Length: 500
Ligand code: AMP
Ligand code: MG
Image (cartoon, rainbow, N blue to C red; front, side):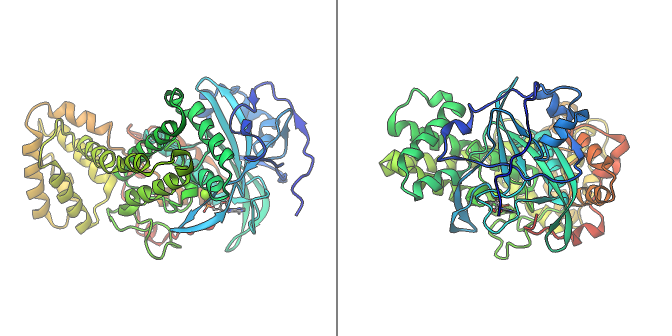
C-alpha cells in the first residue's frame, strides 16, 4: 500500500497553522502521512457558524483550494500532516495498538479561541489503518457532522465539525457506497488510548512528555505542580470532566455506542461518533450499536463504563504517579462528582431549585414511568416545560404531558408529587428556564436517515437545514415543527452498525 504520495502543496493565507499543537511532541507521536486524493470532490455540508468562529474567510466555501484541502487533495506548505498512534481497550479487552487509521491531522490553527487542531476523517490510509481502507462513507460522515454540531448546540462538550466533502469514489462496506471526508476541529484529539499506548510499551519518557503537553496546553492551572502531584491532578481533572460529560449525555438521552478507551477524550469531549443515538422512547437498557451484543455500552451503563475507562487511564498514568493511594483517590472522586452532576442536571430539567431529600426518588420514579410506557424522552421534557409555564394560567396545562403515558394513574401520582415540590410561585419563569434546558430538537435517527437519503440523491439541503435547527435546539423553528415530533414507525427499523 502506498501511503506517501506527493500532494500539491499550497500556502493558504487564511490558514495560520503551526506545529505548536500535538505535532510539537515529535515523531514518537506524530507520524508524517499524506492524504490520498479523491476524485471530483464536492461540498456536502458547510458549517458557516464554526467557519466564522475560527475566523476563516467568508468566501471559504467558494474557494476551490478549500474544497481540495478539506478532501485531502492538497497539502499545506510548511507543515506536514500526520497520523498519531494510540492503543486502547475495546469492549473491555486490551486491543493493543490502534491509531489514527483514517484520521489525518493537518496541525493546529490559530483561532480567536486559541489553538485548534484540524483533522480530516476519511482522507485515506495511514500507517495505522491495519486492514482498513482509511475511508469514511457519506452516510457516517453526515451523521458525525450533524451529531457533533447538535451536541455543541445542546451545550455539551464535543469535537466540532467544520465541513463534509463528498466524492463519487467507491467505498466498499456491506454494499458499495460513496466516499466522504469530515473536517473535525478540537483543541485536542488526545484520547485515553494515547496514554495507554506509551504506558503499555514502557515508553515512560514519551508518556511523561504527553502528560506534560496535555497539562501545559489544556490544564494550565496544573502547571505549577511538579512530579507525581501534577499527574495525579491531571487524572483528577480528567475524571471530573468525564463525570460532567456523562451527566450531560444521560440528561439529554445520548447513547454513544462505542465507549472504548480509544474513543475517550482527555478533555472530556464527546469524540468519535459512530453508531450513536439520541433516545426516542425512553429505555434505560437501549443498545444503539447493533454489534454490541452484550449491551456493554447500553444507555444506562455509560456512566459506569466511563468510570471503568478512567481506571484504564489511571493505570496508564501510574508510572508517573508512583503511589496507588492518590491515583485511587483521584478516580474515586468520580463516585461523588457524577451523582452530584447528574442530580443537578435532572433538577434543572425539572425546574427545581434548592435540594430536597426526596429529589432523587422523584427522578427515579419518573424514569421508571417513562420506561414503562417507553415515553418519548425529548417530547416529554419539552411538554413538561411548556406545561409548567402554562400552569400559572391554565388548569389543564399538564394534559399534553399526561397524554404521553398509557399508565395515566402512574403519571398523575408522580405529577402531584412533582407539583408539590415545584411550588406554586414563578411557574412562568421556571417554565421559560426549563425551555432553555430541555431541547425541542435532537438529531433523531430518522432525521439523520432522511438527510442521508437525500444527500445520496445529490440533494444536500436537509443536511444544511438540520445543521441550522440543531445549532439552536432550544428555539422554536415553526418551519421545521415536524422535526420535533415523535419518531415515525419506520425509525425503529433503522439499524446502525459499526460499519462506517
Ligand atoms: P472506531 O471503532 O471507529 O473508533 O475505530 C477503531 C479503530 O479502527 C481506530 O484505530 C480507527 O482509526 C480504525 N478504523 C476504523 N475504520 C477504519 C477504516 N475504514 N480504515 C482504517 N482504519 C479504520
Ligand atoms: Mg475511534
